[in-house]
Amino acid sequence: MKRWYYILYPMRAYVVTSSHGGKIGAMTAAWVMPTSIDPPMLVVAIAPRRYTYTLIRMSGEFAVNVFEYKYMREVYYLGSVSGWDEPKKVEKSGLHLKPGRSVGAPVFEEAHAVAECKVENIVPAGDHDLVVGRVVDYYYKPPLGEGRPDVSRFKALIHVGGSHFTTTIGESRSARSG
Ligand SMILES: Cc1cc2nc3c(=O)[nH]c(=O)nc-3n(C[C@H](O)[C@H](O)[C@H](O)COP(=O)(O)O)c2cc1C
Image (tube, rainbow, N blue to C red; front, side, top):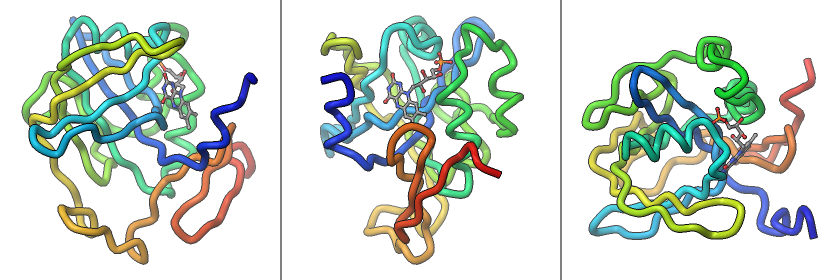
């Protein structure tokens, strides 16, 4: 039963950022989906033990950062080290933060798109909580936009499982290898 959820894979991988009292959290999250078009809302399933979860709870704000496949190692790093153990996690990821436009949560310069959210609700759902966010601002770099993305130009970052990722051309290799 332990890994039953892999029947739902592969899944896109994103990075959730938050900040409170000068502390910054950034964690990889694959369990992300829209829940409402209007009002714009999405949900992220986050385990309460995550450092980023604590900052989201305290600030009531977070951002979902969309990355391309070429950032798989950085995104994998943010998903395998905790801010509870590594205070310099973001610096060590090699990625760069900038202030959010409409929320206190920072966002990544390297992100291809960002959804800035205010927490609408947090719903217990087993060993993860559903963190429901209202999207108060969003922005993107082409070819992402408000229509279908041109997947010949946008290489989505897709989590296959463990340290493996693939993209829209179907390649899969380990973030741990050379
Ligand atoms: C590809 C990938 C996807 C992940 N998806 C989730 C997720 O959806 N929800 C979650 O709670 N943790 C997820 N994790 C685990 C967290 O990112 C990981 O525990 C991270 O170290 C938490 O960081 P923090 O404690 O600094 O917040 C994922 C990890 C990886 C590598």
